[in-house]
Image (tube, rainbow, N blue to C red; front, side, top):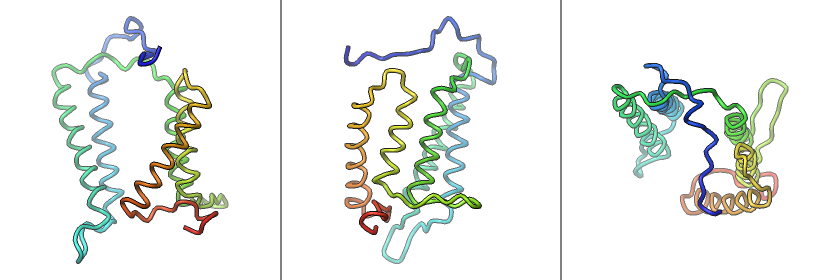
Length: 177
């Protein structure tokens, strides 16, 4: 049935929460860590130029927002850390992490020692990331996932490359940029 939410976590199976590993607190720590990492990673981008804002403004603002939301989450979870995270479901986490890494190394290319991954651009990196991350869902149907990847790829190219004018490569192997 459309709109049904499938949760594979049985609340009865989750062990009681420890004071430091509650779900809410772990989410706050993750947000703080991700915000700090993104702030560090975007520190080389210029914040402003002589013409106004530059490419570093949005990443830094989003990093600060994520960091702040993580601190707020930690503060709110101080009294009630939430239920325990229980066991880690690797079969759902690995595809999502793999998709992020694949997107990062394929959009602009990557070299690590003798390993050379060519710059594939948004046209390949986006659907690749969507399909790989879609493997995490148990009720995924491949035709729907491919259609979703195609539509979202076109939307991302239109938004980031043409509407926002970001210098992200679209398909350098095909059209040169």
